[in-house]
Length: 544
Image 1 (tube, one colour):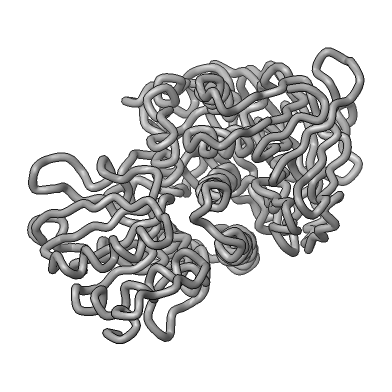
Image 2 (cartoon, rainbow, N blue to C red):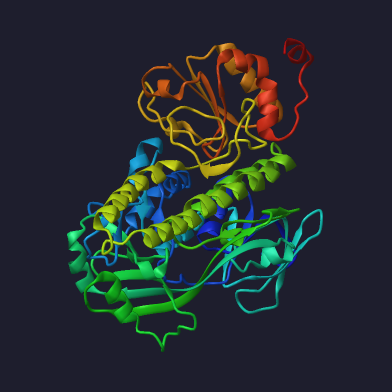
């Protein structure tokens, strides 16, 4: 790429979200330049828990098997979680973050591996996409939206003079201190918890032996009254040696003035060998960009939102940003999208993150604080144990309640009274506009998910062929790619509760209904989901 060269999209930041976005665009033939200042991967194991939904992304990115092969904990061991009171080896504990409970609603199983291993897989995958050029050792210096395009001044990987890149769009995936966000003039709403947190990466074979009493567990959080609702959180990096640990520490703590080894021992309730590989600090706060788009500039991942690493939401939320924005950018660049479709990225993803932060992460801190202040086994053991059991029961419900959805989105065709985009929902097999599509077996064998491609898909299960044709014609008039999957309405497909299901390229349901509704409303349905009106044929206007 020479100075002044042009491309479709410049992606600033080549962490997991930037690599995911580059893969999403590159597979669709969109020309991209990705700038990543780090030549080598930073081996701090952040963002380890990958949900079933995230693994669906890797399936469609053609990298699922490579990712599973990179796992550092054997599959047969398990990747469950545990919450303990007082100390990790204390009397009270229960299973936590049991995402396997919602496995039937997703096509892929969840996974766990260090973020640097995930990035390594994505670096390998993106290198195979000819439309994507990755510049490791380069970073954006200036970003300017010039109306008809974006001018990016970037440093040169070989240390030569900065180069100028011209793009149709630019996406900042450049972290919480995002240059793209700042130069786009996008402000943030911050919620500071005024807590200094430590991240320790350490090696200990004795800790592995101590925790053999919890088979199948890979991450553990410890509740202690003195922390007032904030966690001490352990996670395995591999099986037997390497660990990470997050916890609050007093203000002014440094590497030199605090006994981190004793802090670990106190959290576990036993002594064990410790060899530190990394000691770092971060401030516990929530941040969300007040908009995710400014003209031709977008932000995604930590550039758009950040929160404490509680519950494994962070990197998964960023990957969902990449999928949501990626297909919409590609659709617009390919001529069948629209400005309103691009605007829907903010309309869908921003409230989902706000809900995730408010309804799950912040709420968990508040609930834990109330519990610790109100219950003490030394004061009233029976009351404590009753409340502890209630917490265990509630933990199951929270897994089912985390169901990000786009109800009320401007590009979802739903009936009157639709809700609002939120992380709160419920998992169902029924096809609901704005919700993730559950998998289902086809009568000829295989799964619906194996028939979903890069464009929209129309699932027609026992539908009137005229209704199918009406939707196909409306899509063709828009130039929208549409694959039709036809089958009977029997078996698992009956659970969808609809004859016709229009599925977006990111596997969310854009519309679901019966044949009569499709024949009467096909043009209006496609008008809504594309974000741009379609001129109807005269006959169609008269028939509605």
